[in-house]
Image (cartoon, rainbow, N blue to C red):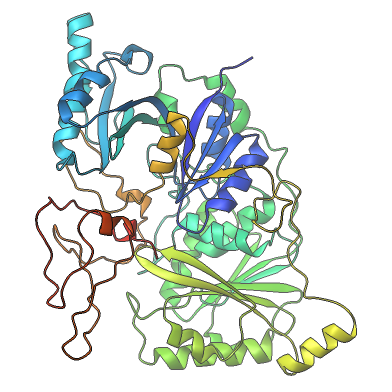
Length: 515
């Protein structure tokens, strides 16, 4: 029987339960859902499968050592205790990535340096030689994560972020992250049982991900390599068996239809679709949304219109008003799913959503709304449903679904558990997007964010917080999204907005504050 061990799969906010369902289907055990992550246990085969088959995973980490430390010297001593020859040989290169959420450590660069020194000194003392550090494409990616004084060393089995599927030849101005696109489609419950329409397709990410889901083609099929292929214990025969297994693939008898107002966008989408080998299943044309007069039946519509952030529109609200009008008159019988950013844009659609889901598109906190499109008024629709004693049909849930409704869900855990590795899992669920760049030998995982994340303003060392306007002369307390801030003297301030600097300020990501 093969050895089982703990693993952590990272994902985007809002896609945790979809990822848990994917891992469960692959045979994962002891699933624990956290923030932007899922912890689970399995063997080497599951680790390979998770990298190759999971559509909503950004990377798969394998924790190798848990310990406690309050200073960098303790980190150095503990890291030297690891039997590094199990993971790294002298002819291999490595890089360190550090993620720090602790007031005891005020400089992630120094932690990374001390971790690197510990590994190098381990080999020098034992073998009189040392492996080399390499910034780009090392043989072993090592991650050290510190939350308060809980430290975890992990090795990254993915390497380059898993959202980089390998089929994208080119991209438009604001392409959608492939992991987000797949998660959006899987949230709808669609699996290829009807036509799929994206009338604002851009570089074609939603269309390609939809076709791959319909055909059940593994998202890793076009990747050149995974980090685990350079590991000391890599089993090439096992991975070849997983890679060449086509038993999961299925027929797709419908079609994916995409259009865009830009000829350049359609040309790029065409190249990407050809690269993915899906020309047979996707139809493209240059066509503005307002020119739609009919829709293929049956079907589902999923689209990501401009928000006015990176792609500007002369009349953004008019665009959303037109979208609502076309949906109502052309796409009757559809469920239309729209991802957008501003409430005023959704208001202009003029339709009542049946479902709202919060998702993050880069740094933007977006909403993903579903509109059930029918003839007549909403009142008539409800009356007809009540008269027939029917309810709108929802996507079927499997017995192993992780959707949190009622008491019929499987036994899984959220939050912290008593075992040290579970404390790591909970700690690892913190946001890792805004980490400090650091020393040579450290790889910044900016690919987690995707090429398509909107450009974020750089706020420097101090998190920007927006004070509440005072009423009259009465002092007003500032409220922050993270309850932990109050316990760390970031809490109550007078209306001038000045903070107390009694304690050092640590850098935090925009999503370290609860929404």
